[in-house]
Image (cartoon, rainbow over all chains, first blue to last red; front, side, top):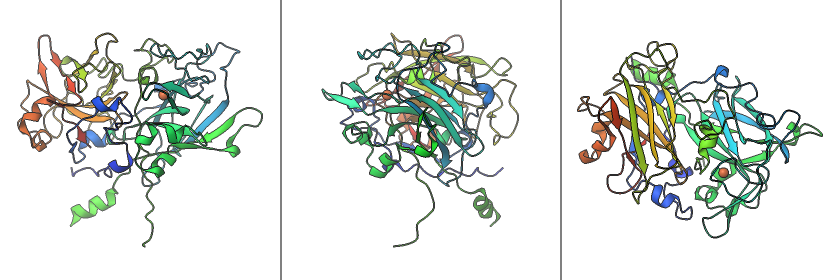
Length: 242
Length: 195
Ligand SMILES: [Fe+2]
């Protein structure tokens, strides 16, 4: 068997550096030695695959998945939807997309979150889904609130949803955060601004998508995720045929 | 100027933050929301091979435990086959090879049970991915086993600094338990890979 086709190398210049001094926690959690570059082997070309049997039918409905029957969480009802694509602009079907977020007041359901905004008894704050054959996914949730954190003395995170995505390969594994169009906290956030490339920040900002709203029910935002693309196997085969 | 290429650019990574446990391992963090928590049974009931336990701690540059870390595991079965269509061969029913582990809240010590994988393109190894608050891009590393012959492994031998290779070798103790500590920064920093 020949070598498997590799994924395009990750362009580290559009990702935040490990050591981002204005995001203080990174200072002692960042490796100081250079990463060792590996050619993809079967260990990185493969990766866990997930299917509909792994998740529940309502796991992508955060208005519903933790609420007392007949009740729903407080906050701005939103549809968060989009596609998972690769760098070749091809959809990634059967991608597992997992999200977690604060409630509308900016509070997480986590014992270490002591922000004084109240817990919402009807909101859990996590969901997951699997992309369809077009790479499409959607969640129903509430728009998360901004929240304060001690980085500098008075920092506030912009409203955001944490996204975790599995494509088809371990090499594509990605965790990121999705921000909301027009949020004035985005340019002030040391975590967002750890990304050196302004276009990459734009790419993390979900767009208001009026066409996808449900009239008199929910407003919609569109957030596409791009995973690493792969070299064409055709080209690999040609190389081997030489 | 030249023509534009049609590629998209990869979405930038952001830290998993302090609450990654409720997002990706809610049940383990004491928050019951999903019926089926992913990554809790790596090998499944039918897996061949030696049942092992791996335990360790992740430390930051000050030597303190990183208690809000989440580690993902990706491994082959005892025959060196991954549960993936591009790996040649079949795995046992119920074998996923994927795991997620979080530390004990008080100590930062984590442990997971699995089976020892077979050789894959070199010595047997587990692929690990480490995320936490303060880690801006998930860190890829590998775990090799102290009781295997790792001398010809192509990835270990790629590490120019021979003294750093030891950071990737889990030490076998009693009862088929291996110890694997990860150091994010400083002396004895674990080798991380750009895959
Ligand atoms: Fe957050």
